[in-house]
Image (cartoon, rainbow, N blue to C red; front, side):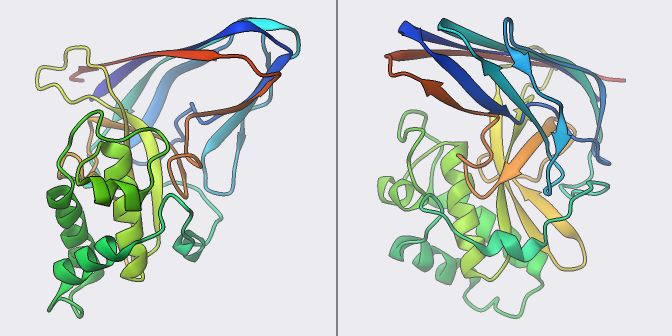
Length: 272
């Protein structure tokens, strides 16, 4: 399948700020499930650093605006050929040991409700293969947290989402990471794009899912929001310990000013 992407992010400031420094995870890495045909990241007026690959195998680029500015606009456009690998991440070069992803953050720290969820999901399955246990955890998260836009916010933690009892893909992913850690399986947060329309028409979707390390298979993706493993409808951008760590755009603003954010993401699919 060929997926085309148009992703524009615009920040507007109420008064000029002294400068902006950003770190972008906006370029897909090559792996068995995706091949970049064409890809551009454009930031008018900015100094673009060299694109480099970090230890996790993700492409990073620094961007800076070193003058008083009232807005910054980041535009991503490109085309990626995707194939279904049953959620298994193959051919992805990385140097970080999987056990490094046993670390939890404030966003993925488990509370009693998450521990109870794991106990219930894996009761009697303690000796089951890791892949089976990972699927059980993903299904349990999907059932415990119905998808409800607006139920949470960008800074909601896994524990807070469980207390709320609903959430979006960010919450499902962070809760699933917390569950995997309790089950002694490394897990990480993945950001990317998803085309979710049956007819391949343009669709607005920036997305997130978890990868759990399964012995004998490696990293396997689990999208609890859609109750599936990532397939040819997904483009993988980058990974991290949680939503903040894996964010496609992270940055610093020099000088305080009220900020507004406008994001447009359009994904279109076409058969080869």
